[in-house]
Length: 229
Image (tube, rainbow, N blue to C red):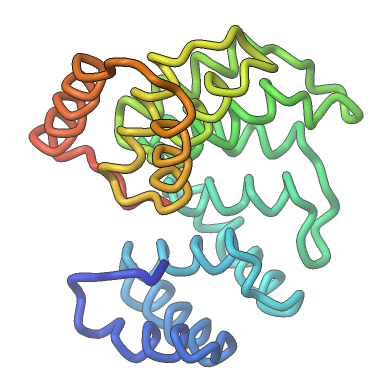
């Protein structure tokens, strides 16, 4: 899915990104983010990092800047540094404990997708090998807060978790609610899952849809519809 911005200065970066010219796109976004403190450029770098479109040299360059910028309590910086530590990118060794610390900082700065990443760590126990305990109730709580506040990734993940019923008890109403909430925010995978779900599960989800739609507009009206990954 392509990114859309209100800032016309970012069009050159977007154009390069859509053409697969990731190095040129990175340089444009990085220059604007560093020299103009542009949050949309910072988000674009977050998306490129999240989507695996940066080479190791770019990752290291971005990490060096973000690691100092995050000390100013910048949400995107904290989220991105957390992501780099969680995945072990570039020359940054994987360190889930450190990732958790940065995600917690990002949550305080209202980066809603940080709820998703941190929630996933607890639900799936991806940090067990590094001493981060698996805590499914805590993970579901984080995902739920993030989803209802505007993280479509958290909503999608919750929807699939409730549909499959593996980590948590299967609940079709909850699955439909969160998949719908993610779909209303244009999450493409959630939309496909919702179509399959509706064909496979026969039931009346009218009230559940209404609740999801009401929550979506509540997010809109509160201006907390986060520019989601």
